[in-house]
Length: 178
Ligand code: NI
Image (cartoon, rainbow, N blue to C red; front, side, top):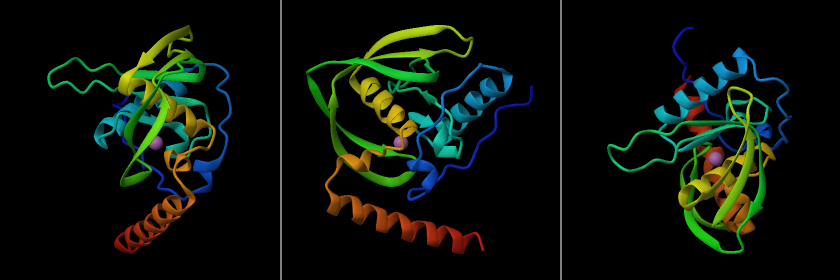
């Protein structure tokens, strides 16, 4: 197999980022390849999570690796059809960003722990309870599969201001690309 490929990431606003993604049927080589390309794209960005709709693919697939400690082994995870099955009452606040909303960060409150069920790249059912930055990241990525962005948790004024900035950024990039 050829090495994993970096894919272009969609920038908000884009209707493909607002659509609900479809469940994945069978995990085949094409989907494993897509997961590898998404991980490559995420690490190159650099980012800690990426959802298939962000590269224009309306399927329920996310990748993440929230290991931040210098020198620690990476932990790339690909989740097909991920589902949050339980959350803690305790909440936590993290400053979130998104590869589809470059250079914008805002505090979002979410459950501090999330139990997620998914199918792994070998087709096995998995379940794990995440906390800390992993809990925030996995909930943020699963939101993408339902057409939801982190700015949807902000007030309408702030959201509109960010959207206007992104429209401007996209125009600038289109102009630069000639
Ligand atoms: Ni995102």
